[in-house]
Image (cartoon, rainbow, N blue to C red; front, side, top):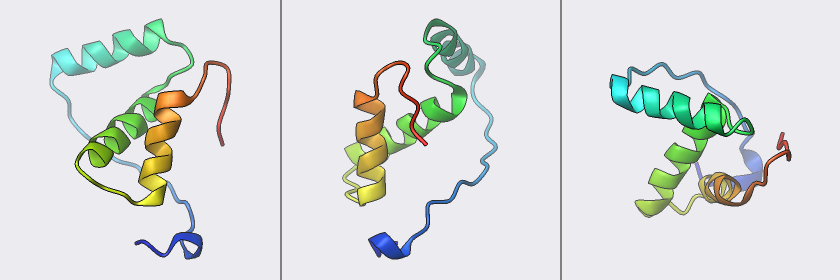
Length: 77
């Protein structure tokens, strides 16, 4: 990691088990905010956690900022 342009953005599938109350809160949030889906929410949560813990990888920072400033109706590829 850390080679910037040499890295190709990839997606990996992650399986996880949530406590029921956290899952229900996530479902409620997504229902109330149709511009969000489970994938965007998890990307934003992980990027936010990593950024707050001091990670300065450009891709993590970009995901963090996208989660903060992406407006409804704007779809980011």
